[in-house]
Image 1 (cartoon, rainbow, N blue to C red):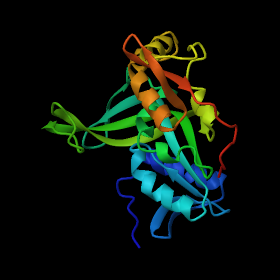
Image 2: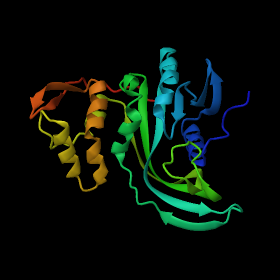
Image 3: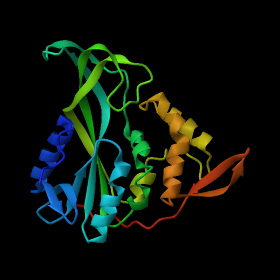
Length: 250
């Protein structure tokens, strides 16, 4: 069988090799109607996913239903260096991207995974990294390969490479997700309250405060927050009491 690795980035390949070595697993394993990134020595599943985590939901649910523990590894890109190359692969320029990432960026990816985030057989491992983005100069301005550019540009993204690993954060319990809420929040709070508290954390990019509604939406879907009234026409939320069970890990 020919596996679909033609569009796999260097970043994905590097993480797949690294985690297969850590867990003594085999890569690109065809089993039970799926091709898994890694099947560990113990028969557990590891999927490396750099974006679009929601695409994994059917695959994960099926693996869990068949008794597998599943870990999803997702790189959280804290900073990026952009390298521009010509058609002969000569480096034309290198610069740091002004965009900074942080752990709260994961909420945009969790909107499609919330049904299984607290499943006993599931864990999410966030690996915080620095990345190098390779771009290839084009002769003319072009639309991006994924057709999402507002304006055509004279370069295309060619590859993503791992530059540095800063650490990992594992989510396998309700408390670990709730720990992302600022401790300064009142017991009952609105999205505006959350935005205000996030804005006050100097280490975070200012844009994160604009994601307060998204953060609340995900945590409410996970049944970790509940609505408890209104305040100045805004919905009030509070944390749902949870047990301290920790999900299985790979």
